Amino acid sequence: MRIVIAEDEAIIRMDLREMLQEHGCEVVGEARSGAEALEAVRRMRPDCVFMDIQMNGRDGLDAARAVCEEGLAAVVVLTAFSQESFVKEAAEAGVMAYVTKPFSETDIMPALHVACSRFEQTRALAAEVSDLQERLETRKLVERAKGILMRDGLDEAEAYLRLQRSAMSSRTPLKEIAQAVVTADALRA
Image (cartoon, rainbow, N blue to C red; front, side, top):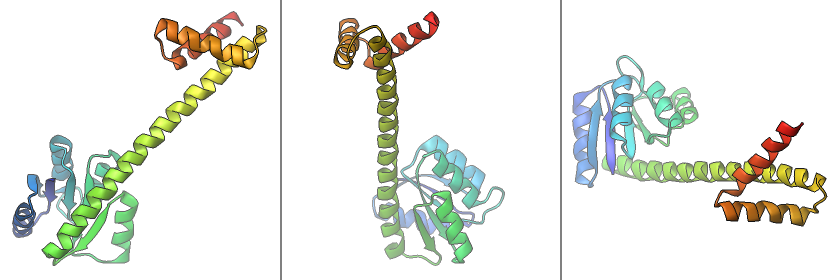
């Protein structure tokens, strides 16, 4: 797995890097602030970013929120703060795991695997939602086009068949044919 470490304390960055590399991970970037972390994640496209909360400049939760909103990588917060308010804010930001310092391999590796797994599941669900939205839009457009053709005396099955044949003969997606019918009808009005 490709990892970016965002931690303002050099010793902790070094320990975490060694721990991750011992488990076959590739640390592709390191950052000392939230702004550096966000830039490294955008540039390096890692699988996961380990993010401290309080760093100089842009804080880790703000950077984590941006990483999550942009869907760039799984985020594991690695911090000394265990207060409920920080945990809640991290969850609201989209963080996939939360580990408190001091940490060990038995804390880091499970958090990494769970975070990456959850991130991939989230990414797959987002793709599925996008596909379903596209299908729904196509369906609505085809229904409108069928309605227009039915005003010209065709029944529903004939209207759909005409759209289908037109799409096949012109090697054009059904959605585009339906859109053309709707547009032509609007221009006639």
